[in-house]
Length: 222
Picture (cartoon, one colour):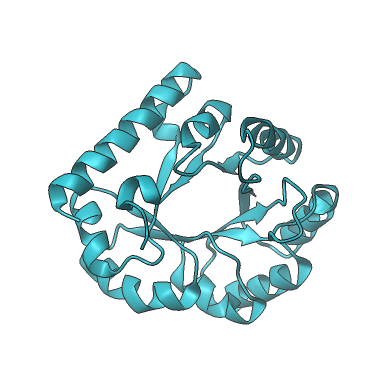
């Protein structure tokens, strides 16, 4: 991806976020753009770094471990978020590697993360993932079970900062985003990780604090 393309794509996405935020009476700076760099190698990522992007998202611990330590050595201000599902046996590695974890969704993972954080001294921000569309194939805690998991996470000392969700494909995302925003308010949480390439502007108008954009920044994956 040529640098000018990376720069223009990034500028366009930032402008769209700013417009959506302004329309909703929000500050554009209240919305963090996470560039979803999963499946993209360091050569594809560097042009975005050069264009000024500093927050990136990965789906898998092993993939992130293979490329980010070297990239971050050159750019210590970069932050990497885990946005994919996390196995409990990868909790220690995830805590050491990531600055935020967006997919806390079950008691066994809460326990594994709490242990890893206590042992390592690192405490990445945590988002509880909610299965907002009640889809059996997706991760996330059921809406009805959210209060119990949140209480368990707080009791274990996890730094829970917000909620995350991926709405069902092919339907209007707005009602699902609005439901998650209500759940976050009811839970006294400010963070809202919602919105991807196709619907991030809607997410921003509804209160997203983090939008996860991949295709619109990197182009379609092979």
